[in-house]
Image (cartoon, rainbow, N blue to C red; front, side, top):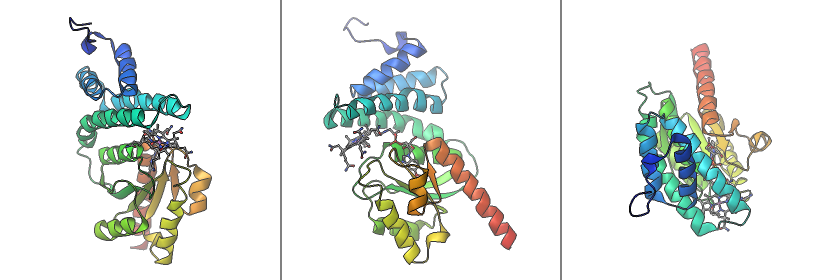
Length: 234
Ligand code: B1M
């Protein structure tokens, strides 16, 4: 503790500091979360380790207490803002790979849904892996996806949904692509906590991605297949 009674984050060892990030995220203490992220990076942690062990794990704990009625929307919003502040520090570091562009992805959260932390995390990790990502934000009706696809001509369309009430909207988007004869022009990847593989299959997506790391691997895999197909037909 300092003279003012404030906790000196630098005096904590890595384990204590990680625990403190979880607590500060829980309490929505944005500046403390930002400071801790900087300290962990200074100590040589990779951006990915900070992201997963400090931030994502902290948000998982918030999620449990939200589910159990211990935390409510205003508190969770503060936690989410703190998480986003931490992610903002990591984003340029994760994107700094210098890897050649592997492909292009448009990603957005579906209509009726304003959850964006997981989707932004996927976008960050995809950028870090060498994809160009056009993040179209939250609450996207089918028209927004179509506009973004027309404008950016991506290889991959990514959709996120965190609510059981909004996840069926993915089918609306995919069915519209089918109606327009465009479905096979894109790799469609879906994700979000309430989804699973069966759901992805049922709505006609190419794959369900459990988390951001799986999204990256799945995207790479599909891009490889796409290039092989193009090479075979050339
Ligand atoms: Co919301 N919320 N929320 N919420 N919220 C959940 C989702 C909930 C499970 C909490 C609970 O009750 N246990 C519950 C949904 C229940 C259900 O439908 N079965 C819920 C509810 C009910 C609600 C409201 C209805 C609450 C209310 O108003 N009464 C409301 C709805 C608003 C709306 O969207 N219309 C609401 C509001 C909010 C906040 C605004 C307060 C805030 C969102 C802030 C923000 O995102 N900017 C919020 C939050 C933060 C959550 C929890 C606590 C955390 C979500 C999160 O950010 N997780 C969440 C509880 C939970 O999920 N356990 C909850 C961290 C993130 C890293 O994980 O998003 O799963 P996740 O993303 C992962 C994977 O899923 C995957 O990769 C990501 C990274 O690894 N992934 C993809 C996600 N998208 C992908 C897309 C891809 C690929 C992978 O594309 C290729």
